[in-house]
Image (cartoon, rainbow, N blue to C red; front, side, top):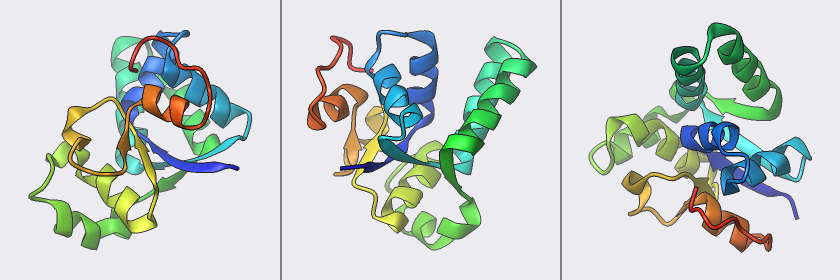
Length: 141
């Protein structure tokens, strides 16, 4: 079964920086075509900004290209009504991600972010890896 998941920014960062992380296992699943990944435009921009700030513009550009090649990107205009529904329930920095998950009916919002804890779709990278039957790493991310 091919899972359809939303990956938040931190999953991509942890996967790159911690090769033994559960986030890296998730990215391996993406690379092997075993999961379908949806991201928001905000995630695309946050990942690119992070790698530009902490590494360099070339790595940031490579990540941008990778995300555009491997993930479906949902634009904010496509989730405006959902954003207005959830605006008071979550911080602005997480609103677009939640709106995408709700609009598309995605079962798993994979992130390492307590701000999503009140939503049933939220699952940590470790819990997601366990859920799909893979032995997780000891860390939560």
